[in-house]
Image 1 (spheres, rainbow, N blue to C red):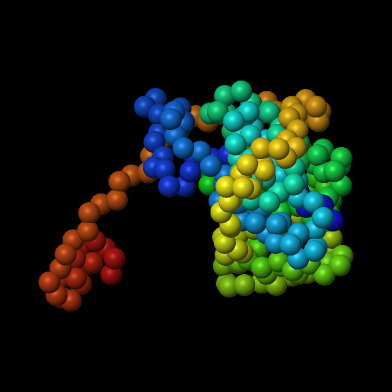
Image 2: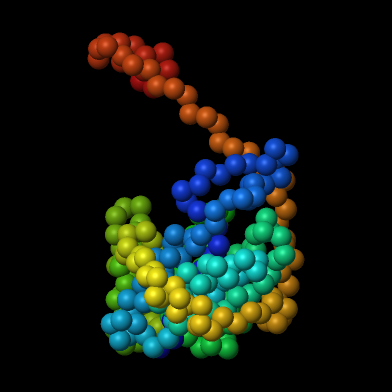
Length: 252
C-alpha cells in the first residue's frame, strides 16, 4: 500500500509572528520556516505504518513556493521514500487556498493510486482545517478527522477521534483520508546519516498547470491585525477582596 502525505511549509511554531506595518499580512522576511507540526505527525504515522509492514511506499507532497523543497527534504530524512513539489506560487507571502490544494492533490492521487492519505488536521498559519475534508469529497473516499489513534485492518481503518465530548472511535473503508491530531504520536528527529541520504532520494518538481489546476486565489486578504495585548493581572490579599474585584468586573 502506498501512503501519501501532504506537507506544508509554515513559520516555525517557536517564532513570534509579526504583522506587517501596512496590515497587508504577516512579515516573513528572515523568519525561520519549518514543516507544519500536524503534517510532521502525519509523516511519522506513515513511517510507523511502513515499519509495521502495512505500507510499502511513502510519498510526501508539498504545494506552494520553490523553497518548500527544504520541507520535503526534512520529510525524506525522517523516512519518506520520495517527494513531489508542486510550485504553485512565486511569492512566499502567497498562501495556496485549501480547495486549490485539494484539487492538485486529487490529480496526484489519481496518478499515484495510494491506499491511504494522511494529512495534518490543519496548518498553524491559516488554521483553515479544510483541505483533508475537501480532498475526501473530491475523491469520493471516506474520511476520519482529528485522529489520535489509527489502526489498519485489511480494507478497514479504525480511528479514534478527538471530539468536544471526549473520544469517538469509528471504522472507515479504505482507501480513506485521515487528518491527524497532536496526540497521535511523537515525531522522530532525522539523524545526520538520514539527512545525507535524503539528498539522494527522488524529488519531482511540477506546477499546478501540469495537473490542469488554476491556482489563482479566490480570496483576498483585506487586513491583518495582531491580537490585543493581554491586560495585566491584579493581586489580591483575601477572598473578600477577590469577590469584590470580580463584582466590579461583572464576573459574578
